[in-house]
Length: 398
Image (cartoon, rainbow, N blue to C red; front, side, top):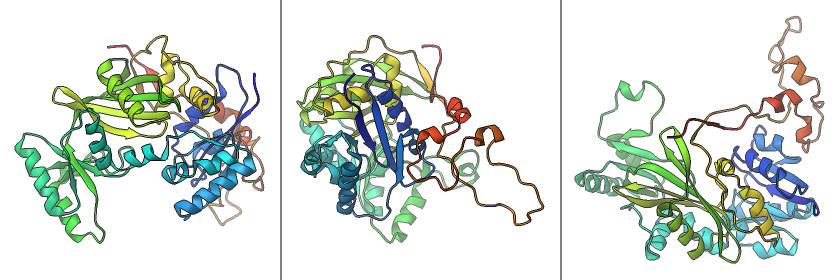
């Protein structure tokens, strides 16, 4: 079965509870001990970990690296999966290696290229992967010029930060004046151009945005697994078209993803996203970290997180060719436990009865308020753990 593997996930997104599940349910039945840190005490990754600690706030990138080095030494971490301050951490790979800690992240050069979307688009075009038309804007005048050029070509303009992950800061430009329709229903990504221009004129800090046409569906996120030798072991596309999601091995999507993973050394797990510009797939974004939806790829019969850990440990994972493609599905919310904490008193009158924040049955096994910060997931009530569900549900294939 091999020796126990100690893995650390620093401040990361909630979906990585599934990443942790996959590590524990590895096909080699290898014992895995997971340590997690986060700035949010209610992050479910803390409850899902074997040991957990709060992260210090306000550290500079270099100070955070020192904190991470100390953590790896104290916890005897074998594999560190950095998300927060990934760029600063991978720049000091040799220091972590000296402690016996492998970083499950690409080399510093690859992380630097894809940290800035403008640098990334220029580099990607140079190796022959198509990208959409784009403009880098920092002023209201540059924004208006880019929007007008796109609209003249019959396109709808959108923008997002030149540096950033996921859909944070993404907005679609509209010429419709602000009205009640913007206040009805759920908040929308659509923003009137005049309000954006006004915000830019009154902003105290400059912006750094990428403006481009609003790309069409489907969106395809290709999950790649690449060894430190630069050879891709897995490339599976996750398709998204409205609510419906599915999988693909079509070379129109996986071919460019493989090319990018090999050309730029996107070692271990990366996620490469495409959308349609007219009739052509174009690159939308490259994430140099495991995707939040990577657990969905497990529906194709592969365990990519564990294979990545094997590669980080210097072991060979072999090719991860999916034995089948899972059915089309959709994503739904499901409960996931958080660490037990004591709530402050809500009433000052001791004569008034209060209701528990959780059902009495679920609260019985909870540790006392003095439990140390490293309380393990075993302190979570069994009922709450049973209630936890996967965030995907199968629907009939198209």
